[in-house]
Every structure is written in structure tokens, then in C-alpha cells.
Length: 623
Image (cartoon, rainbow, N blue to C red; front, side, top):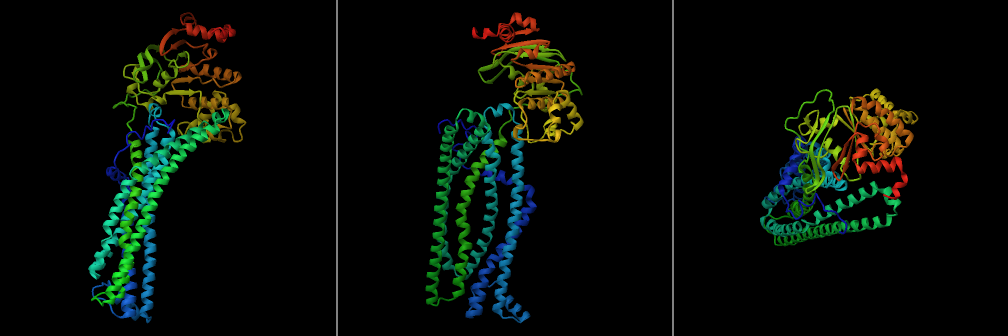
């Protein structure tokens, strides 16, 4: 489809044949549920036993014994005739009534045992897939930023939702399918003992069903994979359009985006329609074969009865007609299981591909132990970095930031400013020997421990579902309510929090829509300061705040920087007037480094920015 990005997750599985190793791996997630599965299997055997008994009661006991009085010695009655007679003698009721009561009891047992089997099976499957879904979610949470540069959120959402649901359908139906083969073999044994020629005549349909299942399997191999891929792309478009809804509406893109979505939706509809057409066709064929087998049974049975063949009775013929479903249902379901199998294999490939995706974050085998409090000195030694090989973003950067000092980083858009702090937080992998904190190589510090010591405030602050307090503490038990209140007061957020309906306990709307941009940014400061980091990073953190609020924040930050190393990225030079040193980046290289006075003299880029913002606003027209 035009405009479709490269399907990063699908590249590795396109055209791949079904790997039943995936099925074994999937079944491995059921191992913790083995007790429930064992109980479910026991109930399957109980259900199968009574499914076999029911036709015997109807045909051998009722028709042959009670109505016609001519039981075939070849047809096993499974001791039911004697049981019926004993019950009749014990209760004084007629044998026919007891046979009917026995039939009802067996039918009730099938219902109860079948319900118990299904509930235990479904419970085991749901529990296993819940763990699988959590494993995928945790894997994705731990993927570094480099992973998300290549993978869309919509496709990942499909893995955690739709693909896991497809696996549920497979495992649930697989347990039921295996249960159907127990009565299949028992019924086959009874039929062979009752009449071998008639049984062989029915078994002649088995190769036909097998051939149909094979053809169906081959036809469905790629159909379901295409359907899952188109659904994944559909979800990606939905996520992108809803996340960027404001932009869509401001630029009047509703009709254009709807057209693209309709094209993708049409592709998915065609894929799903092909799948349903094949399923329906297969179902109609198997139903027709079952009815044809019934006709053959009645024809051959009637001929044998008319010829008064030895050992064949009317009850035996009825028994065969009732056993046709037990004989053919598993064979017919075999193709349907292939249907679910190949749909689930496409999903399983994607799920386990997500689980197996190699982490791009390299953690040290033996992480360095950090002291209770870092001084916060930073050192960059010939630091170079590229998102894509051959396209460097930072080039041979060397500088030192003394502990508890403030470094301001300025430069044009795309010069590598934000990349620098991403490397500092190890959102991307930095090479050993290039970046140090207190003379410790950051590659020797576990990323989680490192990020506990660095507080980052971005221009785009994400608000999670929950209260104001939840968004400050983020569930960290070490941050008490009192500590959260103190952090909010320090950055001046307590003013607007007090006027909220429930204060800190006010529930925020999705993405904090019931807060202004400035209020959300103040909340971001409170969140970071509540963790009490040794290093504070501000990436355009005051860009969306009005001048009055910004002045309040600058006063608070000046107090905070007294015992913290601070890195400020800013285009507005008014926010860095008290920085200890300024780094000017241009195209990933260091143009100048020093005090404000030094870079004003040494850096043409900084001098131009200073002139535009402070000295001669009209110079913008001449630039």
C-alpha cells in the first residue's frame, strides 16, 4: 500500500513456513497451570465416556433389547442392559423408564463434566496468556529509545492485544479438540466390534477429509498472516491519527486521513473475507461429507437388514448413525484447527519475535556501586554518536562540567543538543571511555541506577492517568505525600494545586487536559525534584511557560542549583544568564565553550542569537 512504512516486525517472518517449535514454546507457558489442565483432562475422559454410552443406551438397550428383543452378540452393551434391569428391579419401575432415566443422567453428566472441563481449560489458558502479555509488556518497557525509533506504537499494540487474543482462541480450541479424539477412538473400537464391513465403509471417507484438511492448510498458510499484518497497520493508523488529532483538525486533514484509513480498512476487509470464505467453504464440504456418510450408513444398513445379515440389528444401524458425529467430528475439526493454528502461528511469530527482540541497551555484567550521593561532575572525552551508521550527530566532543555547576547548551535545531542528554541518561548506547560521571564510566553503571541520579524535564511532559499526587510520585514509595508537597511548593506548583477541586488528590484528565501547559510543566518540575537527583537536566523546560511563571521557576531553580549539577538546553538565552559555562553546538561539533562573555566573542552562532534576542530584534529581517 502506498505510504506504508517498512513493517519492522514483519520483515523477519515474511514467507516463513509454520514452525511447530513455536507451538511447543507456546504450550510451555501452560506448564504452571498443569494441575488445572490435568483436572480438565480428567473431566474430558468422563465426558467422553458418557458420550459413548448415550448411543449405546438408545440403540442397544432401548431399541434392540427392550423394543425388539434381539440384541446382537457382536454389539457390546457395556453392561448397560444388566444395569437397567437391576435398577428396574430395585425401584419397581419399568426397564424402559429406567433406561430413559439412565440416558438423562448421562446427558446431565456430559453437561456438568463438559462445563467443568471448559472452565478449567479456559482458566488455565487465560492465566498463561496473561503472563505472556505481561512478559511482552515488560520487554517493551525495557527497550531503549533506539528500539522505538524503528517500531511504531500501533504495531506493538497489536501484539499485546489482538495477537494474544488469537493465541487464546488456539489454546482454548486445542484443548477441546484433543478431548474430541477420546470418544473417537472408543467409538471406533465399538463400531469395529459390531460390524467391520460397515465400519470400513465409513472409514473410506477419512482420506477424503484428510485431503481436504491438507488443502485447507495450504490455502490458509499466508491468508491469515496477511490479515494480521493489515490489522497491525490499521491499528497503527488509528493510534497515529488519534494521538495527532489536534494537528489533523487544524490542518483540515480529516477527509484525506479517512481516505487512507479506508484504503487500509478495505485491505484488511479483503484479507478477512478471503479467510472467512475459505472457512465457510471448508465447513460446507465437511458437513456434506458427514451427511453423505449418514446416507451410506442407512443404505448399507437397510440392505443388510433386508438380507437378514447375521449379527446386524436395527439398533446396531442406529448406533452407527449416532457414532458418525463422534467419528467424523474430530476429522472435520482437524481442518478448523489448522485454521486456528495458522492464524495463531502468524500471531505467535509476532509475539515471540517481540519477546526475542534483542535489547539494544548494553548493561554491565558487574555494575559499579554508586555512593549514596554523587558529586555530579561530568566529563565528555572525544564523544561521537550516530543514530545511523555514517551519519554522525555528535563529533569528537570533549568538555568537563564541574560538580554543582551549570552548563548551558545552545545551538540551532538539529545540532545535537538533545542527543547529548539522551546519551547522558543512556537512552542510547554510548561507547566506553567517552562519558563519565565523577570519573565513573557511565557504561559501567546500570541504566536504572544512573537514571535515579539524573532528573530530566522535557518540554513535552507526559501526564499519566491518576491524581496529581500519582503524577508526582509515579508510585515510588520513597516519595511521601509530604515530600511531594514540598517539591510542588519549591517549584511554585502548590499555587494552582491548592485551587484544584481535591488538591493533590484531583484526578487528571487524559494527558492532563484539565491543566494548562504551564501547569503541566510545573508538575514536571515537581515530579523530578521529588526524586532529589544529583544532576538536573532541563531540555527546553520553560519554553511553553509564560514570563511570570518562568520568572518564578527561575528563582526556584537558582536555589536548587546550589548543590546540583545542572545542564540546561535552551533557545531562549534569558534562561541561561547565570550559567557557569555555555557550550555552543553547530552540526554536532563544538563551536565554542566558556563563559557567556567568552562565547559571545568566540561563537558567531551565539553572537547572532544574542543579537536577535537582546540587541536588535529587527536584525532578524537581515539574517
